[in-house]
Amino acid sequence: MDTDLHAASLLELLDWYAMHPERSTRIRPTERCTLRRLREALGRRRLSSLTDDDFVGYAQARRRGHHADDAGQLRGPCAPSTLNIEISFFSRIFAFARRHGWPAPDAACIEIARARLRGDATIARAPRRERMPTDDELARLRRVLARDAHLLLPLEDVVEFIVCSARTLGETLRLRWADVDLGRGVVYLRSSDHVLGPWARRARLTLDAQELLGQQPRGEADTRVFPFAAASMTTAFRRACLQAGIDDLQFRDLRRLAIARLLQSGRPVREVAAVAAYSKLHDLRRYMDTLVPA
Image (cartoon, rainbow, N blue to C red):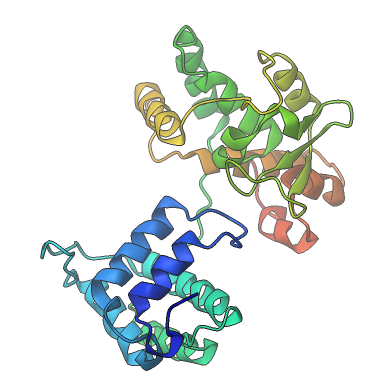
């Protein structure tokens, strides 16, 4: 590395981070957007001179809609929950950079900024979402999906797979045939579209999920089981919900329903954790008292 780290700007660090091959996961679109906003606000600042005041000022400007992009256009106000995620992302970037010798702000700097921002409600945790479809809503949604089953987008199969496997939409769409072991009744979950490393989680498949996967057209090992874009699936799902007269339903609500149903069926908690791919049993605690809507 030819950069003089002690004189390096935040912009140089962010460029280095975006291209570094040792990151375990690719930068997601939302994180890439965060990097862009950070470049716009603080990119020219010397990395070693950044303080908690800089991060507090950045977040407060974003919260009030006073942040301008490189073209001078003001961005809209940012939600406290979104800013809370951004501050956590900063912590990961700087921790990674410090391990490689950059004079990045230390953990105490970010924690001081976080405490100040929580104090004036600039950042906050997102309220816990408990929404699940009722049996009637699910029936109406299935009728709409069955009616549109002739379309090229296999939304019906994706919805049913999530409901019976307790997978997220991202996990479902990243799934490749090489990740599926129907003989053992498990799938291996990728951390990105291209990475299946030793840290990959293993999820047990329910019998319904195994049957549904067995019905899919089998492709080469490196091809995806459901080779479609998440944005297309999300748009089609919203349209189907609108046609079914269902308000405020998301793919993650289907996963929540799947886990709640597994628990309510009387299956051992360890078995449910294996299906949900939770490594710690206490991750299921929020579902323990959840009743499946009638």
